[in-house]
Image (cartoon, rainbow, N blue to C red; front, side, top):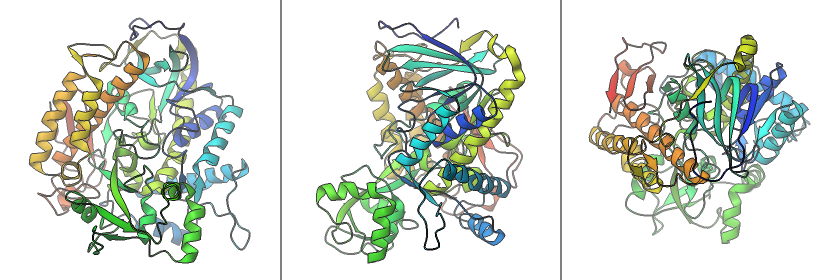
Length: 544
């Protein structure tokens, strides 16, 4: 590779590998993709930003799964449950595919030894998993399939051949302090979403890196306006498990009930209250049997309470709402076909890095839908990438490559302070009165700030002298890019639909029942997806 990025520290010899398929990301989607590709005969390398099986949102917690028996009535009910919430943007054929594939793959997980609990009839209950056990099995299965794992090896950029086709990636190994590159026939991005370093449990490694890399290679985004997911959490903890707040009462500091506040439709009321004063909570609607079930289902949820000496069923405690961005939102890299190929040739996407609009529309499906999507899209992306790569034969590894990364990697301007960039992005995306309650004026103002930050990250990061400094600068650039696609899309959608709330357009508009695509780097564009329901003639809006 002739134009590799450089880090001006003493480094060890670069690690250079070849593979049929490179998977970037070692969470559920990445491991399912790696296993699927290897099962089809591909040589696979998996590179994870942290330790495969221990990093990301799933590993430290329990997760539900959108697992429904193949009964037509149950399946129809499952699909209908989120349709209105999602603004009628989901696609029934994709929901059917995900339900079928998840049912099949969870059976594999049972065969591999996951200890699903049993009901009174002795039947396994497969609607949830504990993250540590789940991911431990996935790491073991992936290694048994012959996949080479690069732990603590964040990818920094994709590699393209001179026809612009994705042909690998490059990054750095933190612990060895050396660059790595993998020449591959195809690449799967499974890097998760972007939670903007909000410190929600397991999400601080999720900074939108995959979206930035995909866009640099010509990939497009979809549904980025549906990215303002905030989850309830104790004010003193990073644990975000909003489902348990269905059994909660919400009160002011003086104990008065906050009318209309709730974990689902009443979450906006909680956010509005938090703008001016603290909100307290108590899980007082859970009966004894439910309390036992909750403790068994999500033991991590109770750890911060136990440490603080608080019984959440009988004691009031302060709550906050932590931004989970596109991790719990539904926006991400656009999926172009049933193999989870993107619009960039040679590139596939899976899990939270990819859009989940296809099964959730514009409203988060919560952890269960995301888990099912990770299982299914990872499986399809790995299989699709393997078939594509193997079709190239030896040609795949005889291509001259160039790095696609720009921002924070190949300076073209003055220096910048990474921490200042991160603070700048967070000040635009974290406040409820900017991101949750959106307005024309607010979005315009934020885009001006974010466009300025984007110009700044084209320069040289002041932290470029260290490996960690380059990683952090690249993360900051990815956060800026993600925020610009989010707000440019939110600006174009002049209605309230799904989780996208426009204070100045509070109603859902029948004329806007279509998905929005977005993309671009220096110039961000937004246009209707011509394949979605009732799409008008495509009209592009740009932001610089």
